[in-house]
Image (cartoon, helix red, strand yellow):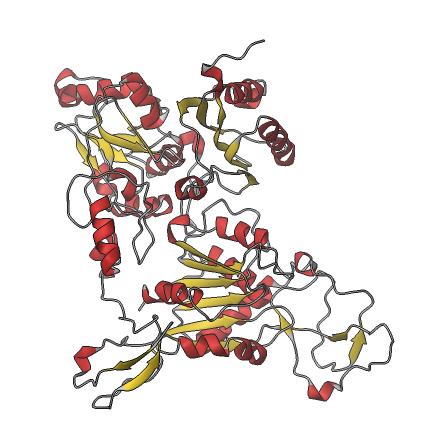
Length: 613
């Protein structure tokens, strides 16, 4: 059969379905086989309670995928939202950030992370707000001022619009009706919404609440959470199919103004007469394009910066601060840098000019006569450092000495030993001539995670010969011991804390990532503002959804060129995907299993740390 030109066009398909999945791995195998055979890219998330899918490909392939999925009774009644669009350029930053250059299929605990902390009572999806079609939603808004007078059954007189999306999404498009109050929670991420609902429940009580989001999935959990509050919160409704279905029904925009932010390479989608609702963060002129991916220096949330301001501010090396960080007082001036971005010597008042080596020349610093002429941080950041497998605090301190020296004006590194003491093991040489070193000349080695059959070597200092060659993939089998390590950290932090951040190297990074995943639950016991993960990988985090770890993070690892022989770059990239992309920073280098203490990598590390000074 001949393929038409229209069928060869590119498209994006979005759908979700809440249903009990009897066999997660079987469904995973189906998606893996089906999507690869159809050359689809994007994200597939499978949980015990359903699926959430955003994929792109040829329209003919997407239609075939819909047919294949629809043949499974689990997906009966699924709303498949298919839209034609231009094919993404795999070389663009937008396509790479949105995951539209590869296919990612994962089994997760939640389809969308509704809360970053444990709720007293998790909402039941069966109690979600009633679905309103686009035309029904439009009709309610159109007649919002008449409910009290006409006595319509089931609707209170007061109608409220509730936007369940993130702040950067609402800045470029939202529903507007002068007869209806619109509540914008102004949240950084969806997991902040429950707290906002708790704090503002008085505004919702007794009202007809109309909720909306991009495609509908975020309203499912959020509407259920509102209804779980009981009497006065019964009248909660949600826009079926989200803004996307509404704009299809009302191509002129209807009550929606601006553009609909989408999480794929299209960035945003507007109506036939979409107005520009957003404004530039700096000059306040109309602007609504997130394609440049400008982000807040402090929290990494997307911000709108027009092209003219980008060019102008780039020349001044200006940083961006979002509205939320300004409200919370994070718009503090950052530490000015000298030369190549590194302060090489202590600055004292009234000294003679001193020679300082920069990246390509030697300069003389002028004499300083006033303290105001240079701004030093009021205090250094305290960073707790977690070593790698078969290391200890002393050896890790030595390995990072150069980095610590170059960051001494920013941060203080504190090193600790892991709790699991390892046996002394050596690999015999081929000639069998070399004897192991005497144990009394060696420091003990430790680990954060160990093999399931691990036996502690508390006081045994005898050397044992390895029964097999060292396995570079041994870290994949070291999955036990987290509870002991967590208790160890709690105790040490109680004695030596507080700390601004955690830095983990290799297995220490895996431990740091696991702690980050529990950040909300550990509040008050292990508090920190950021993490630095070097040559990291994930252990026991298979139930974490993409971007679900809500913690500012810096990821440093060897690129493919670097050929890290201990931890493959793919493992580190997989770990990155678990962190909120809005606050994750990546540094890839070419030097293998190390933390490179040189430019340009050092400058990027400093840029990250300066956000927390």
